[in-house]
Image 1: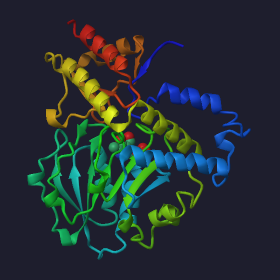
Image 2 (image 1 turned 135 degrees about the vertical axis):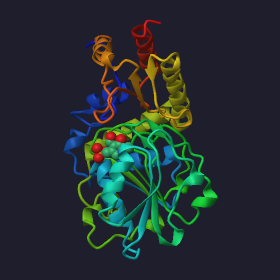
Image 3 (image 1 turned 30 degrees about the vertical axis):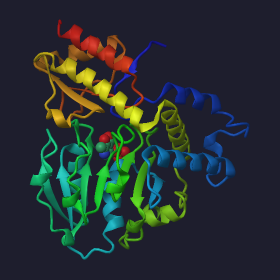
Image 4 (image 1 turned 90 degrees about the vertical axis):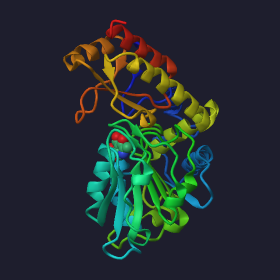
Amino acid sequence: MTHIYNFSAGPAVLPKEVLTQAAAEMLDWHGSGMSVMEMSHRGPEFMSIYKAAERDLRELLAVPDNYKILFMQGGGLSQNALIPLNLLGHKPAGATIDFIHTGSWSAKSIKEAGKYANVNIAASSTTAVPPQAGWRLTPAADAAYLHMCTNETIDGVEFQPDFDDARLAQRVLVADMSSHILSRVIDVSRYGVIFAGAQKNIGPAGVTIVIIRDDLLGKALPACPSAFDFKLVADNESMYNTPPTYGIYIAGLVFQWLKRQGGVAEMERRAKAKADLLYAALDADDFYQNRVAPQNRSRMNVPFYLKDESGNDAFLAGAKARGLLQLKGHKSVGGMRASIYNAMPIEGVQALVDYLNEFAGR
Ligand SMILES: Cc1ncc(COP(=O)(O)O)c(C=O)c1O
């Protein structure tokens, strides 16, 4: 097999060690005679896999005891409906959800939430996180929660964890961290709900992680489907219905890999080194462009454009010939995008940088 680097935005590259271990355990997990895919989700074998995954994720993100971790199905998009369905039950009809709009994924969240509540776009930009002082928030008493996508996978805009907490007191923060969870140290206690689809930094598509503060459970609207009621899911250790067992197993292997690498702090150090290397090559002259304000450039998803966009196809063909795959930008914004998640080694970013320099004739 030729050596490649996979820059896909998701489903995305996974650590080689994890895939190798999964392959070795495919037919017979730890002498059980069964593949993980064949195990009852309530049996002792799978329960041990599940509990280890939950424990390791809690340790990696330092999730406080008063938060539950749910392993759900449905992907990131379904949370745009499930969060209002789960949080609005105790709010008067006409409650307002505040949003910070920073790109395509928060735009989708806004549209979906509008089916369930009033929506207030407190601030909007797709090239920077609008400064917090200018956010036009609903008065706290009328606000259900404040939703943000802390890393916009398509637009490449990432929040810095520099909130003015005094202004956010009394507010429930909901964060879509699908594309940067586990890549930087976060203070979970600042958030009411964190959610993430797995298929970028966690494992295969099909698992969705929800981290929710205890006091927000039990507030679902009557119409909330039981299998997606966070309290029922939490009370049943994510087994109210059959969870995505194989995906949880792979996620658990990724969590063990992360711990062996040195945990989230080490991932943050590596993410910064990789992103610095790549942005420096893009900024070296005006041959390439990244349009995001420097302080909010994503360390995970790096969109870029050729100054002369007629060279796009030649750029992508040359990249492919060098084993640099899936660099085409999202169809809604065009150009190119390099996703450099935790499992992307710095050698992959260096190979891309070498090619960027070669293509630019430097
Ligand atoms: C930030 C973000 N939120 C939500 C989604 C949607 O996830 P899913 O396709 O799992 O519904 C994505 C997918 O790329 C994403 O990047």
